[in-house]
Image 1 (cartoon, rainbow, N blue to C red):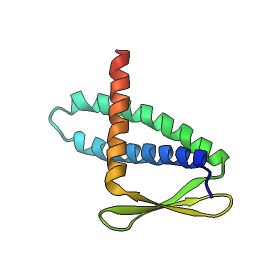
Image 2: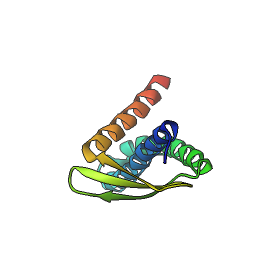
Image 3: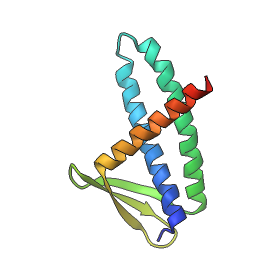
Image 4: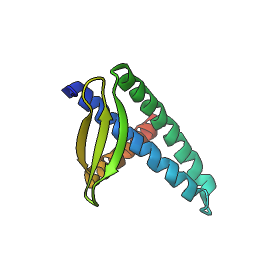
Length: 118
């Protein structure tokens, strides 16, 4: 069983993991673009920043003995996220579109944060 703080932490971790996976997939596609020299440094910097937060979040979950076991796509609308905990294992159902939207918002927030520093 997850308490509300653990659930919030896990949700943040899940969104960060999905963002990292998405950026890694996009990286290989962007490498083949004509303007890849322009886009790759931007994508690389974003990936490094998000990866750092992802690993920090993963470490916090490990201290709580919580880990992502698997993500199982139910249909085009929903996925079940299986979480292994020290006690009972937990399955949370997420709407795929909501996850996609949250990953997009996360990427935009990192991009905006980076632009604000420049």
